[in-house]
Image (cartoon, rainbow, N blue to C red; front, side, top):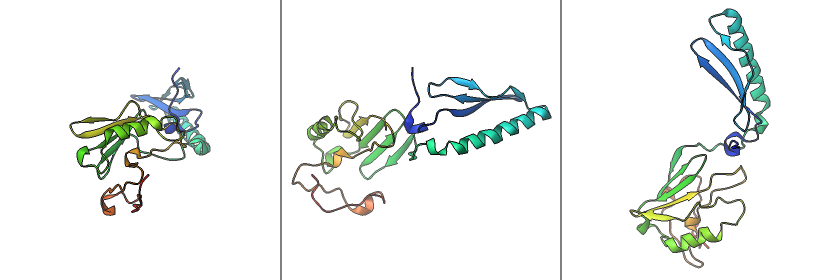
Length: 189
């Protein structure tokens, strides 16, 4: 049976949801196997009594959510967002990470054979995200699909920046880099 992605939901034992149609409202808990558990009666918001019950449910749900904060994922990475980079972009979903490098032939380190070997040689390393298949070049655009983030202890590493021992790889001026990246003028090995 399928279970939800820990990257999105952390260690939550359930998430809270509601269904609404017209003036009717009902609250549910959804467990990690996506089973629905009814946690309220069907409320008809046309009636004052049911509106009061709905407010009580919302108040209690808020208390439950506050008590579950420690179970939420530690980091927040926006899903379905494309991150622009000096040479390309990264697109992250809950099932795959796609890295692209445009104009790959002008990229400082554009040896597809070496990059494929790097991904192949790191596939058994723990705590880095691994490629799903092999890197490809299509219309001078380099693409590699990576496995999703397993939990908060895995990290995305730019293996494309690895280079070869004792070679200097120049990735352009630091003002083109994202502010959180620190450029060094050292050899990349």
